[in-house]
Image (cartoon, rainbow, N blue to C red; front, side):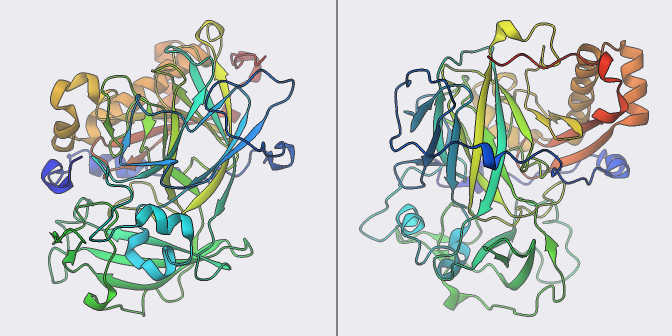
Length: 464
């Protein structure tokens, strides 16, 4: 697929709205209050069924290990064969691999056979040759038996753990790329201008320390891939950086400890509008939402667009701030445990989830709606949607979309009038910039659960 991401994705210009929304940027909670359900997770099954298993009295638990056979690089697709088929309420452990591991081969690839195999690229062989049109390595898809268009798929994030480095099992490494698609790229003060910079971070893989520290940084220099192509910028996924061509600066963010906020930047179901959909712009089906609050103890709700839903996940982050301003988070590899609960369309009427046709996040203490420049850019922009979206992103329509979704959520779920909803949104909700780097910019709206009388809140659908 597309080998030149840069030609497809011109630099995005900010809207005037950026100065306004920065004033209401105050949602900084961590999604840690929900009860972690690790103790209740059933033992692993020994096989991965690719057709629907027979119903069971108790949920089952499957593991999808990362390998060239279980990941797809740079796209969501309704045509992918499922890696595993599950029933509603089953659990799946997914190993996810970062697409930035090539920024430091020795620390992020070497010694890990699965990552070595996924990244394998020599003059004679490229194990995963189908990379693009996006950049993310996604594990899956997971086929949810009985899921049909119009249903809602709830994905509970039960646990997330850093994947140990193959070179040192006590440590995990991650990379932040200050890149050409970042919001800062035309706003540097110091020379050289512009520039791309990789900062490598180190984390404790044992779980004893909950922060990341910078190891070093380097400016991107032209890199040559095994096919002979010279990459002046970070314009192709999976480039292995030759560290003999860069100058590592060890004195980087000395004394700074970045709190960990483990989450997957990209989780979603397959859209129906096209056979292959770029993994970079998020939309109604989820995908690369890059919301740092989608962590342990939270749940995402996705509208099902194709039979089986076909859920995939990846783009794991150790930490990220709202907006993902310079291009990426701390990109790393993470293993997650997820529970899948299917809510049939017929069961949504009269519940708090009625009318939800967008990715919705539930944390222990809040509901979070996701708005985008285009709620469904694939439908709105037609045949050229996957290229045009990169030139049309703006925060103004993203805020309008987010606030309209929050209004509708309150009117349905809390039985408010429109006037009541807008008053409450203004005095009791927060809006934050989800990301300004993915081609379909995002604003999320946050409403605390605790401000409502539970008697006035509609229930969630019953789970059979």
